[in-house]
Image (cartoon, rainbow, N blue to C red; front, side, top):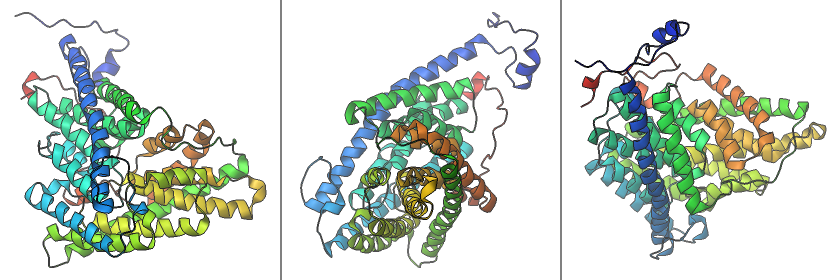
Length: 470
């Protein structure tokens, strides 16, 4: 029997390679990286256009629900004047999402990332085919009828589902399917925001739990291709472009550190609030399919008070980093956005968490920045930079995706001088959150179902057996 060709190993490297489980690995196995990477590129093309399509689908439902027109043009719920009819719109959206979950798949409920994590950890990265269209459809309905969510969570979940389905259709191992699932998720995030590096890091921190060529290379290639496709539709500009900022001095940097710690504390409260609301819904003597309609009542009430609390709210983030929202309206926005989002998400409807968390953190950061600039004028605190630090700190504290949070804030604004306070502030938020909260907003639900979620990276066993491929 012909023996597989093996790459000679330097004697000095042999102990390290053997300890990592890759000593004398067959060359044919390394060729699997090329195959999976090629599949990831094809997958990223499909996911990139799916992300664009989801954006248009949200606009379609927004136009239908709020303006009564059949159009794919960009639309914002805040620009409509429905009055009390807003309740009918949001409740109808909640009912549709509940029916889709009841008769389609209960997995469409929530923001998608925890469900993808569970599939990676407990089901060998297998996601049912129906999720590839039920998740984006349910999210488009929920957001298009006023849901206070971002589109990023559903597209990350959809991209992951497409990657998983591709891996199930072809002869792949569980680890290769995991790489394809993470590649699809990274491509979706990168296509939505133009953030290839943070998309890779998010996949590593929340889906892969490892750093190795066989998983990292496909994910990185998919993120770069997804970014390219997103730019072809959106343009090359930064998603949340802001005017140039000055390098912070020592006093300002210390203020940003304290701000990060404070926002990290708030992230614990935000996470607890979401799951407390969910527990309230679980006590209701009603089937869970009716919960999104009940949550929609609160969404409509919040939208009547602050119309900008409805919808994806990416325009809110752009205004935050420009310092374009006055203190009073900003305080109202984050208060009612939080009420609407926590109740809607706790009710089990479909939508993302990244944009709302960035809105809460950015709003608190901007308010603190204004207060610090007034109280300590010599420190040189910039409220715009404080908003950016708050945005990243909130997501880092709630999700524990530290590196992804830092790079996301940088890539969406392209402000290199913001990196130092971003690293410091988000690290403080991560530290405070880790001290006070055992599980993140992404993992708390699946841990309660008995899923063991890794908290640290470790050596990954080699995936050499061809028999592990279906």
